[in-house]
Structure formats: C-alpha cells, structure tokens
Length: 128
Image 1 (tube, rainbow, N blue to C red):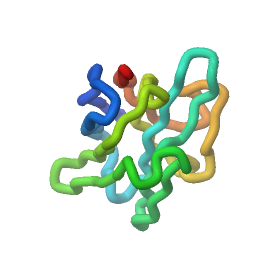
Image 2 (image 1 turned 135 degrees about the horizontal axis):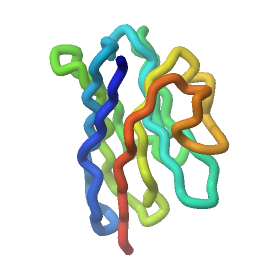
Image 3 (image 1 turned 120 degrees about the horizontal axis):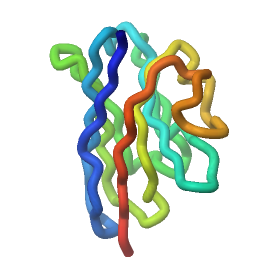
C-alpha cells in the first residue's frame, strides 16, 4: 500500500518561507513521478511542481524562481522549498505520485482518482 505523508504546512507572513516534506512508503520516490498540487476552495487543483523519475522538473509559472522541488532517495522523501511566499500562495497543498502527474497540470479537485496516490494535504496560510 502506498502512503504519502506531508508535513511542514504552517501560517507565515508574506515574504516568509516554508519547507514541505512528503515521506513516501510503498513506492520509491526516484522511480516515481512525484508532484505537489494545491487547491483553494472554489478553485481548481493545480500542479505547483513536479519531478519525474528521470529528474525532469516542472514549476507552475507563478512559483518559478520562488519554489524548489527536490528529493532525498535515502529518506524516500520529496520536498518543496517555498520562499518569498505571497498571500495568493494560501492553499491546501498535497503530495501526489503517479505516472500521469507531469501531464496533469490542472484537475477539478485534488485527491481525484485520476492520480493514483495522494497525501492527506497540509495547510499553507500566508498573511499580508
């Protein structure tokens, strides 16, 4: 059974930083396509960043230059370093794993079955 457990969400002021972690079990992160999605109530679920098994990295335009995705194979974990946070970054952020992650930049809702594996989500709140 695959499990993805996120941590690191918090409330911060604009300009601050957070580091989200996704600890995986039941799969190997360097053999998997991994991604971070976020959802704001009433909005669609958008792919913030992803890293493929081959190391190809994607960033949504609004986070380029501010967010960095990485993985630690020894810890079987994926991370999202979020710098220069803005109020519009406020969202529930989900870790996801699945072969189609890089091809699914937008979903109606997060935790949709179209992506095979999801974490429970972690809240990121940025105040102005």
